[in-house]
Image (spheres, rainbow, N blue to C red):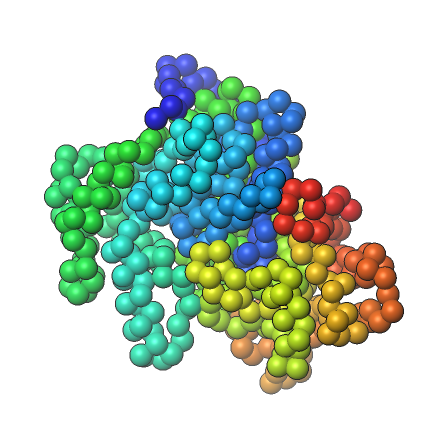
Length: 439
């Protein structure tokens, strides 16, 4: 592949990047982060910067969509900056299927396919993990019915194996001289049901082996340090969103397996906060959407089905990875305030604002959640609680009857701002670069 060659004897010692930004989601994911990454990348390029585009956590379980010149591209493993970046690095914290990465790279222009690098410390994720993911969800369904609602991409099992120190890294895979050696490493996991292990064939592992050796595997420390010294801007794209973080997310159980905060993702990529001179951007929607298990406090009621249908008609609202129809609901100010508190966001972008005036077709009132009421006591809390099942949302309402589109957007933006306690910097009025408006 046509990739930059880094001379470790000339790396230098610059401590941080002097231009950089993190883009992350503030609710349950699917907020339109890909668009912000793409736009930010274009801005750095316009300023004459070369760009190191990084992902440091997650896997192919989430999709980020980019629309440029009317062409839509869905990325799962790759970063949304692939059309503009000079180097794309999939970092040590990621769980990566090499076969799927190679297939996905074909979406990039041919001259961009050679910029892709994978950290040697990243974990190999494959069919074995996906079968185990399905097996675990089936077991949960049988035992108590409380399925997590995963995408069955194998992320949870791969993360668990890594925590048990029985995982296979890309460095481990590269050391295997034959596919049979890699096969033996994969099926030697303790505690994995025999019927799950039996689904992995030698022919499939041969595909994995060949794919690993077609990719450019690197030590990311050298790449990052060289880019710092060469004056690159760094752009970190975070998968999922804060309310799905394994520690701070939805009840601690109905969440993803790798950190989704800006600081967590930076650490998993091998970066520090000092690398991001331009701070981080929290991306939200003008309403809430969610897939998977667990409580969704502000989900539209049965009486509000017509409101949800308008959004489905206008936006689509299906998961990029699974095609699952997302649940929809009102903007959750409590959850967003928690995300702000746990991160270092300097800017906030609210996408899908163009949909809000369309809701006048189904309702004369918009609602925004500002607090939660404990069902058993009636006590109000302003923080996002652990056990969401015990609480119900408390809303403030905004009448939109007879209002113009511009007035609805302006007053709704002001309402959200007052509830989350932070100004909105950008609003998205459509899917492409041109639809982002500075407030």
